[in-house]
Length: 139
Image (tube, rainbow, N blue to C red; front, side, top):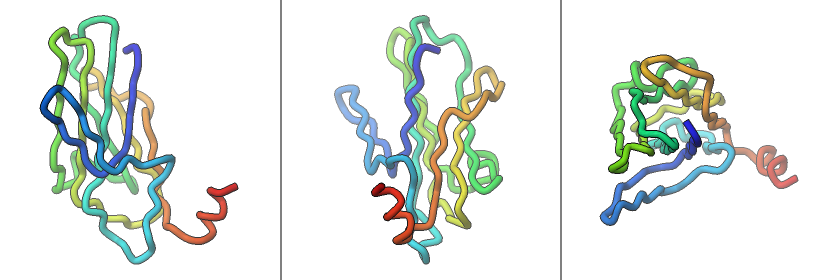
């Protein structure tokens, strides 16, 4: 694999003209207001590019609060794959809808190649929003 791009957002749309629209892209963390236990949706967009045609089976796994968000979650909206004509890139999209915020933890994404899981490739810290967090991020 030559490069991996992973972004967390509210939604991903595949548009006419081979365009991908990412809606509501998150920065280095997701701040959740206290008293908001459910987020409508959290989407992971991953683009993998290689110099050779992809010949491996690719998939992703995500965990939050120790729970496998793919295997244990009933609200998986979509796991979508798209590739270009020569097979040198692949887009993988995973949408979890809804996602219950049960505490402050990391949403961790793993890449599986031919069913073998590697190290985490992306982490989105989910934290309660507070004045203290805002002061810390402004420094």
